[in-house]
Structures are given as structure tokens and as C-alpha cells.
Amino acid sequence: MRKILSVAVPCYNSEAYMHRCIESLLPGGEEVEIIIVDDGSTDGTGAIADKYAMEYPSICKAVHKPNGGHGDAVMEGLKNAEGVFFKVVDSDDRVGREAYMKLLGVMRKSVLENHRLDMLISNYVYDKQNTRRKKVMRYVTALPTDTYFTWDDIGHFRNTQYILMHSVIYRTELLRECGLSLPKHTFYVDNLFVFQPLSSVKVMYYVDVNFYWYFIGREDQSVNEDIMIKRLDQQILVNRMMIECFDSSNVENKKCRKYMINYLTIIMTVSSIMSILSGDKENFKKKAQLWKLLKEKEPWAYRRIRYSLLGIWMNWPGKLGRKISVIGYRVVQKIFGFN
Image (cartoon, rainbow, N blue to C red; front, side, top):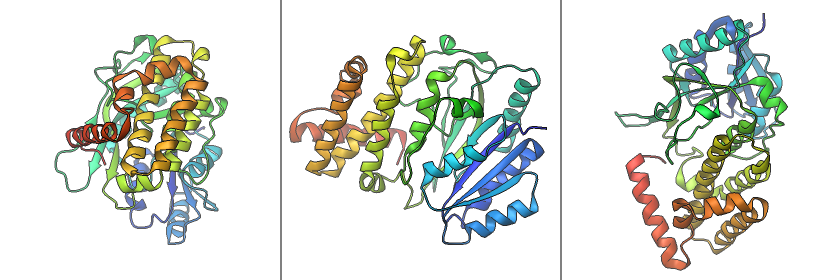
């Protein structure tokens, strides 16, 4: 019998924390395959992956490959996936058991009833270290709950309320059919992973449960602000690829097109503010080139994004303008507690 869910766990030197992640996934039992992708680790990660594969041969699969970065590890997981649905869980994160069981029930039912389901959505928790109150990203104000729906049924997404890799479980074949391709040795590919397939999504289902616990707190974490500035070229590369794969004229549904433009607005904002925070004139030029690419590739989307509140905020001219952008960013950062 085919597995209901394939879960890729990209691992690079993850021996200190990968156990917690994998143990949280094991309660899925025989309906799930856990693909532990050892991305050229130099510590004990590979041995741990092999141990799980030996102890749970019908559930865990260890895949060893030369180091290619997070996106390459995700693509390796997808290549090896045999389940109807596909999920990525990073090795320093975990899933909630009760929510996990509920989502498996939804996927199982869709398979048994042969009901199309392209994207299953759930909440995620910002599991920030040393904070008692955890911020939860929910979608109850934007999405119908516990039912199949299409883009026509969605409501309004707030600017801070967009769907991340943490939120989604895609139908495996949809990811393959849409031609998903993630670059090697590049962080922030999770945005491309979510964005590129969206125009192929027809049927969705949202469950209001806190499934994904997104750990924030490691100094070397990719969302750490200093790290993001150092890896700005990678952020911009992903942003460029999102622009290049987006063809607004081929997105039939207006609400899907609007959501994709809003998503692109957020990523343009992140790329822009990190460029500004770097204080580097070369990065200011890269920011300008990114906006130029959007204008040339998607002039209609450019106008929507550039003259939105965030677009104006990110493009105040001169030194004073950049200072205003940073002040606004710090205020939002404090309110929402990210980075």
C-alpha cells in the first residue's frame, strides 16, 4: 500500500537536535515515510540517520549525498518520495502530535475517497527560545476551515499572514508536474518551494491546528538578522527566481494571482530591508537591480508592488529615506517578535 505522506528531513551537522524532530514524526506510523537526508554532514548525522533506518526500516529512509545545501536536500527528498503527499520538516523543528494525527486523517480521507487535494494548510508556531508565550500563525480569518475549497473561497490575508513552508503539505505529483527546482548551496529556498507551485493549486483544505513548531534561537540560524545580511546574495537569488517563474498572465484565478503578488511583495520587502540594513552601497545597487528586474519582467505586478504601502516604505530615496525604512522595520520587528 502506498504511503500517505512523505516527510523530508534535510540534515546538515544536525546530530545535536535531529532526534527531537524525527521522534515527533514517528507517531505517523506505517502511513508515513520519513526521508532523512544527510546533506554531506561531517559530524554524527549520517550515523544517526542510518540508526533510525535500521530501527524503523518500514518508516525511515536514510539518504546520503554530497553537500548541496538546504534546497538540494529538499529536492533529494522529493526525488525519493513515494507518498501521496509531501512535507518538509527541518531537523531543528518538530511537529505537534495531536495536530499530526488530525492532518493524517484528512489526507487519508482524501485518498480513500479519491478527492483531489493539492495543498493542505495548518498553523505553525514560532517556537522562540526563552519565550513563554509562543506566537501562532493562524489562517482562520482568511481560509475556510475543515472543508475542501478553491481560491475563489479564500478571504483577505493580512501582510503578516502568508503561507510558509511550515504551513503547507503539497500533493507530491503536483510538485513534480509544476517543475519545482531549488538551487544548490542557497538558503531561503523555502519561499520558492511554496511560491512556484501556487498557480497549479486548485483544491485546498485548512485545519486550524498547531502542527509545525518552528524553532528560533540558534546563533547560526538562517533567519538570524546578521546571518541574513551575510547571505544577502542568496536571498536575492531566491527573490529573482520567484520573479522569473511568475507569469501573471498565466495565473487564471484572480485571487490566486493577487495572493502571489502579495507574497512577492513580502519577499521584495525582506530583500530590500536587508540590503538597506547592510549599509553597503553595492547592496543598494543590488536592491535597485532587483526592482528593475521586476519592472521589466512583470510591469503590471511591479506597479502593484512598488506603489503599495510596503513598496513605498522600502524605496524612500536617499540616506534619510533608508533611515526611515529601518525605523519602520524595527517597530514591526518588535511588535511581531521575528528574528
